[in-house]
Image (cartoon, rainbow, N blue to C red; front, side):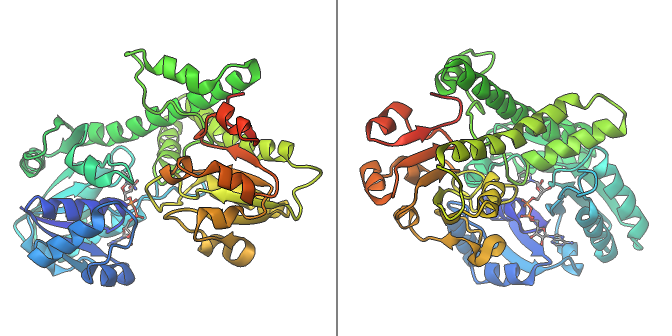
Length: 431
Ligand code: NAD
């Protein structure tokens, strides 16, 4: 099939590359000229394992092309996918549909074909597919028949290529013509396909992210309870997760969820409930507990510090909201480092892929190596559970630090083993 994808962010770009890899002809469009320039030179603008190689290969084969913005080129394609951002609105937490609306208008304006399939991949409030349909009808002057559907994306950053090729399920909603086309598009992917109406498809995506955020917050509140009562959250959740009715996923305690999806989608689903005047207390609790985890870590740092944080050297390992990505959107690290600098600490940071130079500039030291970051510091904070931190040479770490203290926000180390090496150590929900 010939697919035109609007929005070359984490979602659109992975889809463009993977669909091209599957043999489809794909054009990826973005309004960001710098991004398109990079992509046309075969350079991947984001860190996502394996993506660079697929882009290079498919650019060469001609299956994948890129362009700036939406134009009349869309008439050469069977389907347009909308994968633009839907950030939260500051005033009320609702998803901002500005980019989706703009894209729908652009598609309508340039389309002169008899018919076109339009599919929403972005995470959106319920009813957005209908709004897309209305907008397409209003702005199209050539009487194109638009078929509209929803195929929300569920891939995980850091494992996006694997997830695209091996999803748990593919969610397909909307007009029959779109549903049939999507079933054909994904026929080579061996996954369960849930076929439904557009509203349910849109809701499945939001509901899934809320359920996962809920598990994270439930685990974190249990972590607080474990620490207060002398239990170990890691052991507890290992036991809980062995119950097949519950399962082991998303039961890790830490400094809470972040990224571009859970925080935004939880606020979005809450705002929908609010709109219908429904009870929002569960959504509120999930968000409150999540914010509390960051404060809890800061409190632990304070408890470990003698007198004051002012002029104390503190190292941070991990900036991205999770490992294997360079995404720092809503990363807990940002809030925590803001607090540290406000308190007057001298902060040095290291992450294998992410960087926060744009946010903190010269206010903190940005290191190229994990050992460089810990030289002469008094506390090391672990904020992202990258594998290379688990594999760190702790004897070397101890020698390099001024005082060997670790606050492990992701419970990557075994407390007994680290303490035995001579560290003062605290994790999240363990003693
Ligand atoms: P992103 O911000 O990384 O990328 C969005 C891209 O859209 C940007 O490059 C932007 O320049 C481009 N864009 C905006 N308006 C445009 C227009 N009119 N024409 C062309 N390009 C335009 O966003 P993302 O992380 O890829 O997320 C996209 C959507 O997918 C969001 O709704 C998000 O909630 C959802 N989603 C994201 C993930 C994830 O892991 N990041 C997973 C599942 C779903």
